[in-house]
Length: 65
Image (cartoon, rainbow, N blue to C red):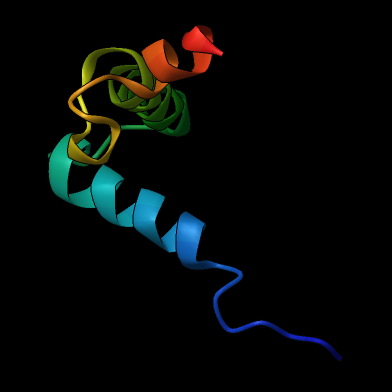
């Protein structure tokens, strides 16, 4: 069927980062969980420098193109 065992690697990486770095307490409801994930994604993309991007944010690298 053409299954690639690495196709979920990105999702697993994102889930791992959310669990270990951002979602440090259990949300009280689905709305709070969504807010927490949205905030985490914003931090990851706009505020958190990445070593592999020479300590730039993904947003900054994307805007440079």
